[in-house]
Length: 222
Ligand code: SAH
Image 1: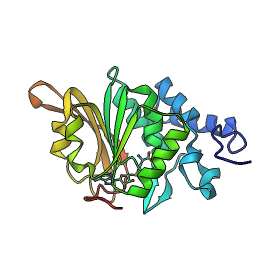
Image 2 (image 1 turned 90 degrees about the vertical axis):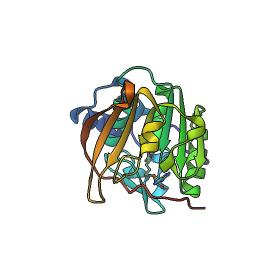
Image 3 (image 1 turned 135 degrees about the vertical axis):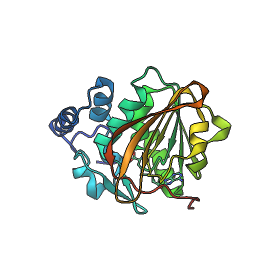
């Protein structure tokens, strides 16, 4: 066979994907659009071929450059939290990595602006999203710690790397009613926080559970 196996047929059976979806449901994910995305996005295209057979396990996997593709459960949880308050038009994603979270979310929102600090990962993400025909995504190479001020405000912001504290610039770039979903804490483990900006700038805070993410780092890498 030549070229990428977009359908995933032959790589992973429908049963393998069903098993993953059932596992996420058992873990409390109930949004049917999110579950369908987890079923349909070919996660094996986002990892090295050597790891493709493990792509539908509910676990993070290495993607090179000391980074990982997020665990499907965590991607589903964040996606569900982001879209549960109603339609979301413009999203900022900090830490696009291989682009898996981007692909899951893309058809469920208006537009995604993604930032990734490691250039080779960004180039691969761009290629994979292109192969999947996902068009409502704009990606840039940079340090997402300060957000994307030229494109602000955003209805939602997803951060895929752990911060010790919540970056104020990201809160500033949210619309009133907008949500920031970010793992906050040290290297040992973090609290996945959902921060909703209310009128007057008040922040409503909800914990979505304990997670383990790679750290949010400053600066970019060519
Ligand atoms: N969203 C990915 C997860 C990627 S892991 C997925 O769906 O699997 C987190 C990513 O955040 C890494 O690729 C890392 O390089 C990136 N990252 C860390 N700090 C960053 C920063 N300050 N700006 C942009 N990207 C950052």
